Length: 294
Image (tube, rainbow, N blue to C red; front, side, top):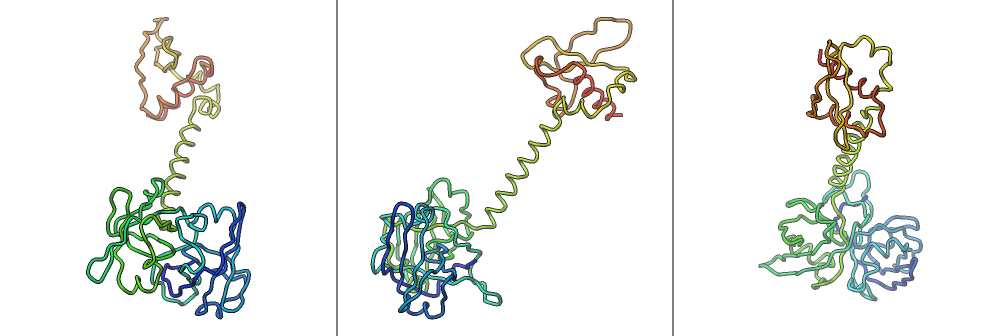
């Protein structure tokens, strides 16, 4: 895990890309001596595994997935020999947490809209893909090329952040120009909330399906039907039939009522196709409702 606080810059030595993978070698004399093979390193916000170290240079393999999902595979990223890249080591226990939770798992690629100076600072605008827009929160965090930044403005799918001189000088933002491809990662906390809500919705739908007439009928002994003073019968009209209560008095032919007499949850559960549900199942469902109301 990373924090998005860039402490080192490196330069691309070689970038060898193939259809199903590749390798990048980065010259990083200020950082390489403290690294080891198998360590993780974030390069422009993309978590990679170091596979080789020599003469102040580090190398990492790139999978086809990495090339396809990050700026490594984008021609407009400008990742060629001599290009600067942001480098960050993983967070260690006891170290100051200065940014936000960054996993190094790039979500998508955005494109620089502008880099506009304003006094001593800059406005940095990045156009984000439509499918990533839901992770943009005004005053929330976003990772752009591995840098933890705060969304200050948001309109027309362009996220704008305010860049102070220190960030400008100590990251590769100073090299960015319009249309450049940049790696984007949304706040992981927002993704967990989104996933939790999706799971809760799925659970609710599953519970509704479990209250189908056939499931309800299976849970109640058929002998209990004989003791009930009210019966329910099938309505003759429509493709989807509804339940209606009838009387067991002298009148042998009860009046047909096409209006459901149950609450929405029950009436929905008791809606059935004439071809898929037995009459006895509907009687059972209706009597469960009636007994529950007592």
